[in-house]
Length: 223
Image (tube, rainbow, N blue to C red; front, top):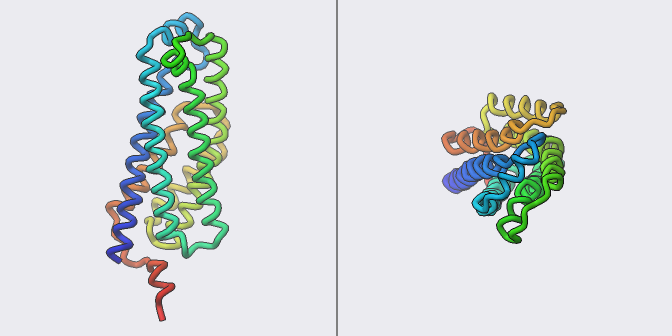
């Protein structure tokens, strides 16, 4: 039990780091001119070199936060995922990897114009900047939420079966997952739903001490 709780705490801390890092980095990268901004605003924004340095910094924060997310996934899968059917574990693992990849892609599209200024000392064309921003919106607001739904549903299933998550959080996770699945709008606030959800799950894992769930290792080693 002590080893099990230490593993859950490691996953929870990694999840909190991921939630904070993803939220801050996405907020920083989304500070660039949004879709529909006039060309003068775009040109004035990218004429300032500090924006390029900030974009590179936020990409670094995002990278380390994603490493924390993968640690979160690995600990959850190894410690409480072994009792679930293979289908749920595969969806959880595959969806998590794809979620991280889509986040990297969307963040790269957002940061590319500013990085061009910082590294190449070349001002991007406003039209190209708008195209990259539109592509980032597609990745972060269309593809990423649907993949996040898979991660949420599988996490809720794992948490319910093992007792690692309380019933209210399992239900809330399913509700948020359905909202992410059926939402057809391209809206910036929906991007932050995923890190907020990860943060809530992580805090619950950190403060909750389940005693009614049986460790997978104990089940295997039982006579």
